[in-house]
Every structure is written in structure tokens, then in C-alpha cells.
Length: 251
Image (cartoon, rainbow, N blue to C red; front, side, top):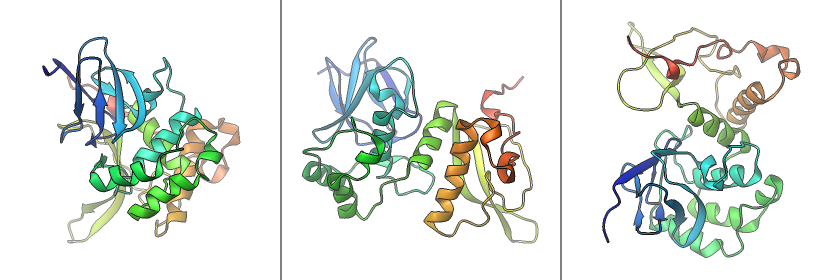
């Protein structure tokens, strides 16, 4: 079997250990989350034998691409359900290291995916016993809609979020902050702002899952709601008027 000449990766990953197939090649995403394909190939992705979705091969995809549709609708149930399912295997609060599919995950998915389908309403999907059974077996939780949709939105815009970054200070202490930066390696433009708690959407210190969900829901609402529908107490979030540095170019 000849290795295809082109490769791609997921902007919202990396997703390591995903099975994939094209008309001429079958493989597993490598340690960088890369898959290989030929021009015009339809690439189908799997966890074990469970099909996640498919997309036309491209240098970069996101989980929102796997409906194989011309648009990326972040409210399409199949998009949200698929992203929640795969990203829930991440060990990171902010998904910064993506997901590595190992044998434990493959076995859990194989055991509980017989009647599992992403083609259902979001509320129905999250109530399925098979969904929770897989994550309970792995000691993981099903990620909430807002945190997954925010991650997809940032990825589509070329932005990566790092939560709770400790920024050293001259007195030997540190400041905690959420850092938004362009996806990719190399130097990045930096925009700094001192806020009351260092967070993009003000909730105070995040100590619990509930605190995290409050922050994620505010970010999702800020992007998706009309300005008049945004509560006054976070309408002017410190993130609201920050330029998107991912579109900057060095000269």
C-alpha cells in the first residue's frame, strides 16, 4: 500500500490514534495527529470500528468538517454531538493537547457504541445511556455544549486557548490568566490587558465545574446572541474589544 502524497490535520486537535480510510489507503493518525490522503479523496475517521464522520481531504479540518457539508454550522446537532463525544476523551480543561485514542478508549467505545448515533437532538444525545457508560468506564465526563462549541469556534478562527497560564512576576510570584493565541508554532503578536481576574469572561476564580460552565456559557452567548440580548454585567467583557491577532502579519 503506497503512502498518499498529501497530509492534513485537525485545527481543534491534535487527534492522535484516530483510524481513517480513503479510497486507496487505511491508517491511523500519527503522533502529530496527521492523516494522509490524495487530492479529491473522501477521508472517513473511526475510533476502532465506530465511524465518527467523513470529510474531503484538506490540509486542515475541524470536527465541524466531518458532516461533509459545505458549511460549518456550530448549532447542527450532529456537529455538536460528535465534538462533545470526541473531545470528552481529552484530559485537559482547555483541550490544549487534543485527544490521544488508546486501546482503553477503543475498547470502551466498542463496548458501548452499538446503538450510538450523532444524528439526534443535542438534548436526546446527552441522555443516552451508552454515551455516559463509555465515559463512566474511563472516569471521564461528557463535556458541555458551550465549552465544546467555544473550542470549535476558536479553532475555525485560528485561535487556541490556554487556561490558567501562570505568568511570572518580578517578585517571584505569578499572575493567572487565560491566553488566546494563533494556532501554530513560532512567535505570535501579544495583546495584554490587566483585568479583575485575568479571565476572558468575568466569573471570578474558577474552582469548580460550575464556575467553568458559567464562563463558557458567557463566551458562547457573547458570540451567538445579539448585542441587546447580552446581560449588561458582561457585555463589555475584557475580551470583547480585543483584535484577533491570528489575522496579523509581520512586515
